[in-house]
Length: 359
Image 1 (tube, rainbow, N blue to C red):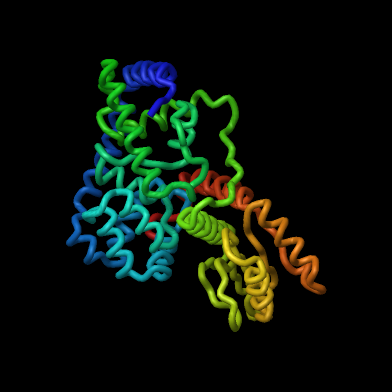
Image 2 (cartoon, rainbow, N blue to C red):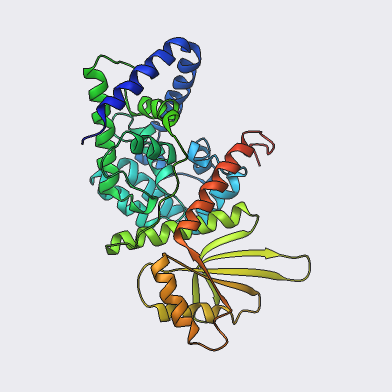
């Protein structure tokens, strides 16, 4: 791993000086992170396999990755309803306590669990194994990008197990470099995250924007892209006040990737349907969306894909009389931009504490 070591050491010196000037603040904030980690480390395999709904709430609600949700009970109850509590127990136990490699456990979790992405997964692993596993979120990505760490992923769907293991090794290399240069501020990967959170964000000349999502190159990557975009569409719907679900049958022969639904008094339901295209037949996508329109409550049908695929879908739809005005188009990149903007807005609002934690 080759990073910009000169820049890293500049940040380290600046961080060290900041900590000396703000000893009480930095000590208290790091102590809070260590306390969270200590709680996470109490979850052994036996405990994870017996988790109740309330246990999952206690596990997940303190995570920073849950900061965009004011009503955390709603989000966690939805995770349980979507995946089933038994599968969640099994996969969390395997992620934290399994015998396979970290990369294999990561991939299995991502393939089998809906609605839990790299931010939540990595935060849990980082707190459980602070010497081995990195916390990965938008701020970490910004820090790694500024430090010119090679192959820093541009989007969550590229975060497979091999990539997560590589980034964790990069984090451990940073710790070794800091130690070799005489800096003892970075004792583990929890402290590295605090350093990145505190220091690396300062040198952004302009906001780091979401990159264009490229078409997936492998079947595994295609699955991660599909699930990542599908889950973010669901998140966006929930943030906008809809009842949002994934993998829903809305009409005969039409099971769609995501649905936003709202009830209007005694007038009934309004449904918006989303189909995510990463691979497979464009004709099948169009047919599925048109079948969904047979449900009279469906007021909008949306094809979601990369720019190249969307153009192909448009051309196919143009040849179908009476259909071309029905289907709307949403680019992957725009989905990610909207999700990131809503996440920042909700996190800021939730810090005001307007919604009681118990709700």
